[in-house]
Amino acid sequence: MTVVWICAVAALYYASGRLGLLQQVVRGQITPLWPPTGIALASLLLVGLRVWPGIALGALLINIPLGPSLPAVLAITAGNTLAPLCSYALLRRSGFRTEMNRLRDALALVFLGAFTGMLISATVGSSTLHLAGVLPAGGYWTAWWVWWTGDAMGVLVVAPVLFVLHAARWPKDTPPSRWEEGSLLVAATIGVGFLETAPVPLTFLAFPLLTWAAFRFQRAGAAPCALVVSTFAIIAATRRSGPFAGHSLLTDMIALQAFNGAAALTALLLAAAVTERNQTHEEIEQACRRLAEMAARNASQPGGPPVLPDGWDNEGQNGGRARPP
Picture 1 (cartoon, rainbow, N blue to C red):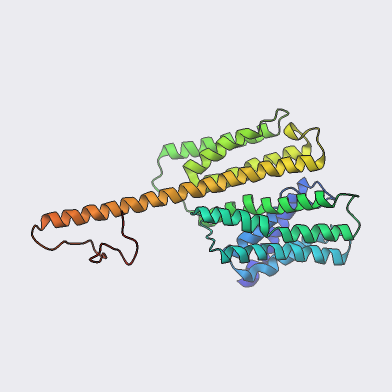
Picture 2: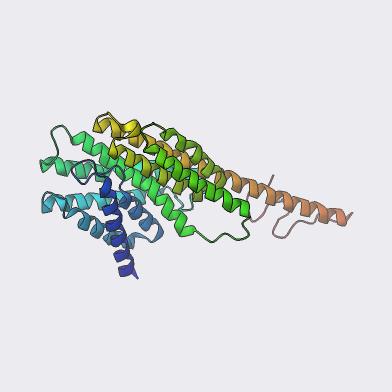
């Protein structure tokens, strides 16, 4: 099974890398969205460290036809492998949960998994190309910025979707109105995506959709919505259309990744905050039901000792946990 997982991760890494290269902007191999980083980190978190050879193999297969020389290819492959491993170690140390049902999980994925871990691949890759003399004059920082933000965006918009798919279950007893609302959200997201590529700068229309998805569907709606709006924004930037027309490459990339980062942050943080709020509300309701049950039992036995619900001790605590409100 380990060999099967390694081959599967390598195949997914390679296939998603080929898709990412369709929107390359620097030297045919640096793209503003690099999906393999999200696949690599998600596979490490969901399957374990045993799949890291699949990440290295996929990165090697992607870079062989792109690298200027064999040593450069090996160096870039090492950077692309070490970056998700570093992100994995940081997230495990922080107590990250792939369910992302806490605000701290969303913050950890953003600042540790994406922004910090991907510094390794961007620095190693850009420095390797610079030393090989294949970057244009003065293009190091542009390449570094696009590389770093592209890898970070892969973590922010691809990994959460994979977490959703891993935990997905067919909903039961879902009212028809819920399906209708979900279908309307999908249609609206695709429509706004096409508007992002129009000559009129309308990228800001994505944020009401992200807010809607996060509040109503939490992570299951916010993560795919963020992926879609970011993908359409990248298409607009590479075509130099809409708000990305008439600017330099560096300016467009800064504007693009600022939008993508804001969209991902809005979706993930709002979804996590709403999920955490809903869980707290459910815990309060459960505590109230248990207190009502205790009061009903005591009222039915006047003059006797208080009767507590099953599992509660004499101090009103349940299994050593904090006393309910």
